[in-house]
Image 1 (tube, rainbow, N blue to C red):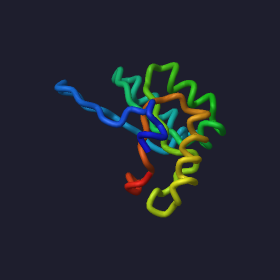
Image 2: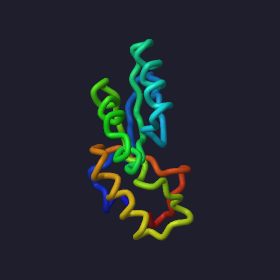
Image 3: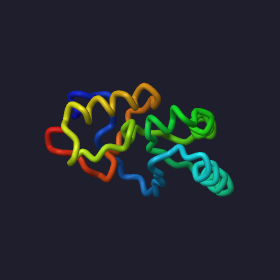
Image 4: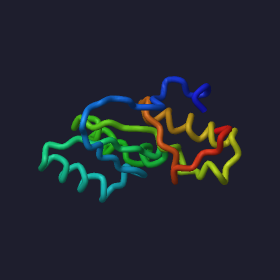
Length: 117
């Protein structure tokens, strides 16, 4: 997978003491705006691992995430389980999501990818 998507960040190494907030599966029309409002109350930033089809369906919410200074990551286009999906289809799904999500970050849905993927 690293060879197919070399521009993604695969490891993060630093010695800083920080808490990283992450949210998956959005943008969602109800939940994501609420999360953004809550984060704003505390001047906190997060990373949103977005599903490509959700970004396509809710581009304004996705743009709000970016406008408010949060990070985004690719979480595939249709939330495929890597253990139940052949590698070619999985890679194409990630590529399709990348058409909507400009990020070097990737998180596999369910935390599942095969060794080949």
